[in-house]
Length: 511
Image (spheres, rainbow, N blue to C red):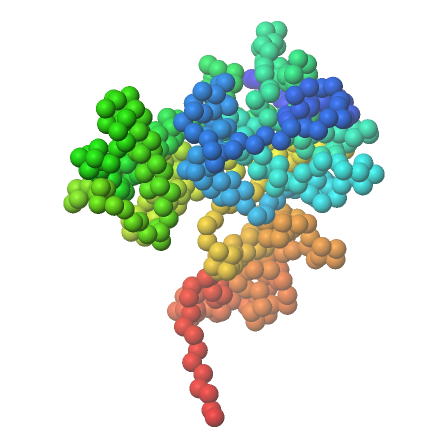
């Protein structure tokens, strides 16, 4: 019934989405670097901020202007929080990445657009425009480190795809989200981003500006740091360590005690000091200051020679030990700090336990760090999709860092062999294209002169058997002769090893 009605009315069902037009973009950077405090050009040297942590009381950093400033200061000064962020960056940003341009119709790999993406990546990483002099371009790894740190400290990251005068991609400029604010567009019911640089307001409502957040609260337009809950434990840990440092010097370290025999001291006083209390107090204060200065200035190898008027003893806490109490307080502080930093105690050097506990902790940390990797893949995919579409390709780009793996490369070779066999089997059946298989195996497109193998069934078990003439030949003679009783008992599974350990061959050395 509905089919006849559609034919009468001339209605056709849409099987594809309409094409997205090429965006209208502006040349040159729209946003200002986040380290600039004004948009007015000046020849004055930019100030170098020195935190002087060696002489700073870290507990006073609680008095920062806002939570973002306090988070940034503690990430720099707190050893545990700094170690947590450093571990996140090293784990999330792996050594290699892949970028594939796919057609919007069927999600198949587009070789021409993929080659263009790899050219853009090479331009950003190593090939700059030498006519610009010092261009200030940063590599993909440097950009990833800055963006990942923004996600950890502020819960979001932002970047701009800078275009040249011909409106083609030139570089990626990370922007600190601390300078980005939003204006409510009630007409379109969206947020419009702006950047505040000094007293200037820069409009960032442009397709070349990209913003992404982690665990965004829908009741707040601004993201918050996932590590914000570590501030109180970090402050408690610093306060506890300072108190412990004072107690260590005051109650645990031995102290030199000087006792003055008052009767002998008074006998040797001048006559005016013996009969005048004011002169006596001044004389006593001078003698005490002189003795204190002499004792405090002694080196460990110096000898001490005194009259019998002075008695020297060592004051210690005897057999009293507070080790158990300190260990309990330290454990509470370390546990709260690891919980707030979203890392395992082993990352901060606090955990002691069996190898099974360490393996579980490493796996959980990899799961947490993978969120940062996914956010980097997300923003880079959007950036390079725009960059390729500016060249007229109707594609989208999937950018992906390699999966996080804490094992060494030499140990992963056996697992790479299994992955290679699986991809080649899919290629043999024609389930993946030659370009996609080559990108998964090498990270690059097939080299010139590569023989297409997709769908040729070159991995078929019958290939190379009796009667077979080459890859894809399906005329090989079956080994069972058509009878169940004559069926060969040899397995069809690949005989090539898949990473299992093999017993080494013992060779005898003949002298």
